[in-house]
Image (tube, rainbow, N blue to C red):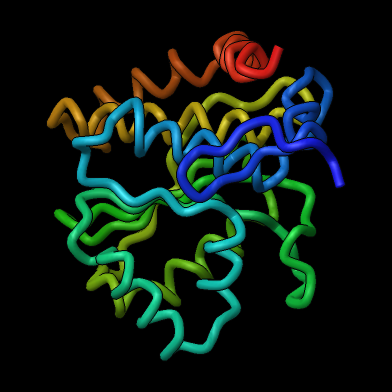
Length: 211
């Protein structure tokens, strides 16, 4: 088993996970879960947000409706101003760590809207995100509204996960600052903070935690 190099919240990072933060590597669920914990515990601890990594999203998408409702209730998801979910295109129900592309789905309780952010749109993740929104609409008290939000496209085949992290950071920062998470102002911030150059800088920042 690979050496454990960091524990934060519920996330245990091993050397093999940390190596995926190097340029040219596709982030796994542990890398995404780590940054989600950083946002929740250290960057914006007072923000009323819930960030769910790919393993949890996979369960919500494929689990029994009763189990899903119980899980969301335990996380008090319906009380959160913003719910952020990492979306993966994995189609294998018995393989939680599969898939080849990450995108992000958000839910805002104030307007009941699901919003999808995809750095490689159009992609198969749109259909997955729509399925997930339909599954969560009732337990979260959401509306039928589903928006595809324009975000900068990734400049390579492997940075989709880092784009998800950058997008999540912007949305949670907006909640922390009591600013809206939709509209022109948010779009401007997303297009500035999620450019490929900014995404590459975020990858370097995360890698530096382990060097």
